[in-house]
Length: 385
Image 1 (cartoon, one colour):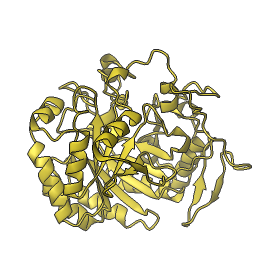
Image 2 (image 1 turned 180 degrees about the horizontal axis):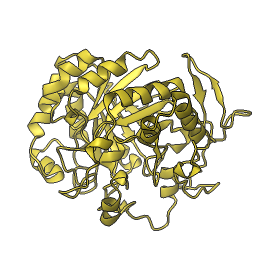
Image 3 (image 1 turned 60 degrees about the vertical axis):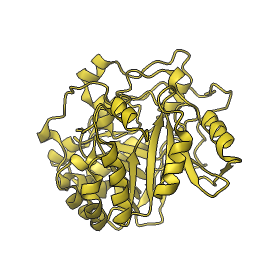
Image 4 (image 1 turned 90 degrees about the horizontal axis):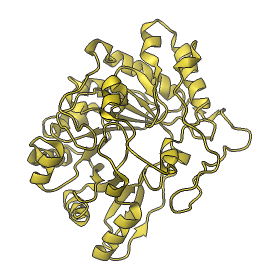
């Protein structure tokens, strides 16, 4: 990387973080002798480790900043400043960058947005990415509105897994939250995905106190009947969540208490070290997850990087700004040079954004509306969630 000023702005780095419940949130130290190094990987790539020994293993690619919903916790305004179309990465550029990331140890790839199914000919991109032998997991997150139309093509293109966002089972609440109709289309899309052969479908529900926190058990019942695994997400203060407040957050502990009072004893499932969701099982065998990024952050094991639609690369969801990889590609930089820039940036990574947000005494929204309008890169629908 020729210009060190392109690095992500690092947040203040306290060394002894204590959470609201007194739990020590200090990130685990890297293994001896491995700080910022690379180690052998089970594939043909080497693992690149950051300052805390976290590998670069999981890449989220936002293929568009456009969306066909206006969810209150993500896109509360009606009008937005969109990224210029000629700045959006084309499919060949996305493939090239994914190949570079895979060569550095990335094995998991998730396509996001905005709403990724708004990207024309997305199945063609999936065909291109599915051919990469280093990628073991190819997933997509969608709001489900167009899923009924594209589910079979996505499956045939090589997509492994789907995550559908659905926060409520009530059509009236759906419209109030997203300011659009389409609840029935989302349910139909989930059914179409099952019919197309997707066996691993997750349903993400952001839980907001006073809005949908009375639907936890109903969502579990729906997931069981529909053959999908529900993941509850604590309301987060990121991007366009300009009306966020801590009082609206329903914690993981409270969710478990409510569900246990309804279903009986809940057991934890053995955790995948870097997975964002803690998984649990009900007495009848139904499994569900909780992503508790607000009250119990998983920064210590976070292996995720985010590529925005215009090629800006973020090392943390809370990062102030990113690194322009598209500029390097279009400027003619050899792939080896791009790979070196990525590896160097990751080796210097100290980001623990969610942990640091948790320790704030007067925690408020991350960005104001005027800040978002000045820089669309700060929007969640651009960052890929």
